[in-house]
Structure formats: C-alpha cells, structure tokens
Amino acid sequence: MKIYIDPGHGGSDSGAIGPTGLKEKDINLSIAAKVGQILQKHGIGAILTRQDDSRVELADRVKTANNNGADYFISIHTNSASNPAATGTETFAFPNSALGTKLADAVQKSLVNEIGLANRGVKHRDFFVLKNTKMPAILVETAFINNPGEEKLLKDQNFLDKAVTGISKGILTFLGIEYKDDNDKDDNISSWARDAMKWATDKEANLTDGSMPKEPVSLERLITILYRYHNLFNR
Ligand SMILES: [Zn+2]
Image (cartoon, helix red, strand yellow):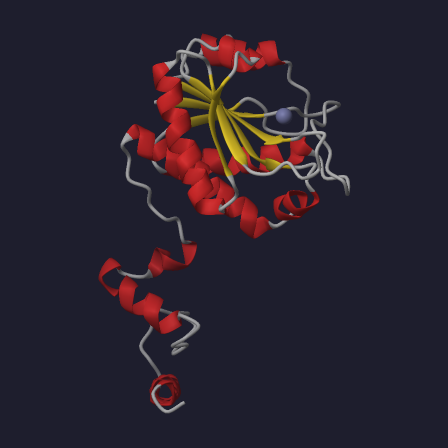
C-alpha cells in the first residue's frame, strides 16, 4: 500500500497567506508530514511529494505518484476566500470518482469530528492533482487561513495535532485499518495496566505523574499516592 501525501504549495509559492502572515505552505507541510508518520506507524507506505519548503510543480507531484504506482493521493491545503467570515472544512474529489468520493467522505467526516469546524461537505472539482492522478485522489481544505479566527487555530499546535489525527483516522477508516493512538508515554506501560495508569495520572485523580512505571515503589512514593488517594475522597 502506497499513499502519496501532497503538502500543497511550497518554496516561492506560499499558497494563501493569513491576516497576520501565516503561510499556507507551512501549515500544509506540518500536517502532511505528521499524517505520513502516522500512516507509516500503521504499516502503510506513505510518501510526501515535498519534504521541505521547496517548490514542486503540480505536474511533477502527479507524475511521481503515477510513475511509482501510488494507490491513493491526498493533497493537503488550507482554504482561502475573499470573505473573511468564510469558515469550515471541506474535501474535494474528482467528479465521478467513486473511490475518491468514498475516501473524501471518510476523511471529511473524521476531520470535522476531530477539529469541530463547520462541515462544508465533500465537493467535486476537476483540480489539476485530482484530474491528472491515475489513482483515487482527494484534496483536503482544513480551515480558512484568511479567516482571523481560523488562522489563529492554524497557529495552535494542539489544533494542528487534531487535524492530523482527523485526517489520518479518516484514511485508516477508509482502508479498514484500526487507528492506534500513538502516545509515547504509554510505551513502557504494560497493556493490562494502561487503563489504571490513565486514571491515576488523570488531572482529576493525580495520584502519580506516571514516571518510572516499572520501578519498585519507595515508601515515600507509596505514602504520597495513598495520601493523594485519601484526599481525592475528602475534598
Ligand atoms: Zn492551497
């Protein structure tokens, strides 16, 4: 399985620019690179059409995907309109592409679910990268960079992470692959202990910070955990 992830614009082509100067090309690359990482962690060959801030012509993006037998092509953009109040998320597929539309539906649904912006739905256009790719292709417009509120969101790493999760989950759902949360903190914790650890490190319980999960517990750590547990029910 080979998926080409296409961060829109790059280099001298900034794409749309937000009211405070945020450049579309940078947001597209940030989202695309992380989506690629997540797909790879799920065993999918994910390849970026540009790895850095360089200019790659649309024809070359399409050509590499076509020549390398890509199964799917996913172009990542942020939207822009003359109206500063334009808002929401939309995903494009090529007209009459059944698989492209199905993929667009899955990504649009999952992305809106994660980031919570207005759902503008799946639309069909003959954009260059949708028209000239041989495989099912979609183009995602995460949010409106020209809208001051959405530009602010696009500067927020937490929001971008949600967008990454949303797009990745959508692709995986379409492929019938179960999404596995990649929480590095959990790496050393045995699977049977994860629920309990999640509860104990939760802000509400706050029994432990979760560090040294495999180490024997000292008296002072044990007493602290018991003390916090006691306080949990005596607030
Ligand atoms: Zn764009």
